[in-house]
Length: 423
Image (tube, one colour):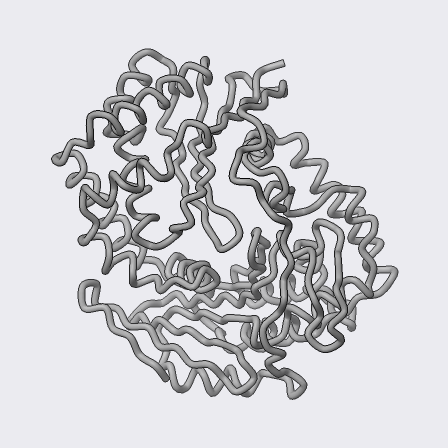
């Protein structure tokens, strides 16, 4: 196994790639009671057009298939539901679908290997019939309707719609009621056979384990027909560098307006260093200790600290700033003014160093939680990032590099706003 140590935080990561292509990442945590495992496949909501490795057939699937497939994998041929089975064993079990991957997980203190039996069995046992697929359509249609009525989700999805013209990242991960009506067992099997092959999957485990023993246990539970099919050809629409529209406002049942400001990143420089610099800039612009936040809060324009996020992959990259305000357009205006001020007058070195230390501290505390560690390593792996790089690179970020990122990404023409107002 390949071992990488991080001396700064006294953590080690063990990685092994099996003959069938499965990548296993283990982060041992001695004397920790909790054990966490997450098994992910590089298949998300944006992967709706691809070429099947075996047949070379080009497939275009309805929106929402990755999420639908995640739901269906729990159902077993004997009529049991693996999520129920894991919870009966005392596991905290779940699954989720994102734009670029799907993951199955559980956390426990005891009976880890009983949980591993179930996890590795159901993920490797697809069972789709006309009857159980039709039944699931009704369940997921209800879920979609629920999100249609969720102001928090609508303010997010409308932000994506403002930033992107063609990129499928702007679509609901669950699809639409119309799109899921086109899903059949054949569609699900085609996607499963393409994306749920071991060469497209990564398993991350964190807890008190001996890595070599754990890998042997994982090997024993892999079914014989599993092999690496090689690289999957994915086809994505061409995306314009321009935003789709500057703003979108809808009315819903809310007491106070919700807003989300999006910044489309066209820099083509989505690296760990860029991510760290963006986090520093966001905290300096409108984080809890910033001048702008204090001013907005004192005037009653901002009701709480805004949520700040930077999402990036090979196919998309953007910044999100969300919160509640009686006057979202005023916040949008003042934020743009503050960005211009930073670009024209420079960034305060003292504030920069203080925020950088704060962010470094947040990166370090991530390693106190087995669930945070495992999910972080899985997410970063699908972005071709080594999670340790955040710890290693943060001290090296300087003011000049941060100013460069500010100028390249925080461009006025790429900034949009989505608002949900009270009816």
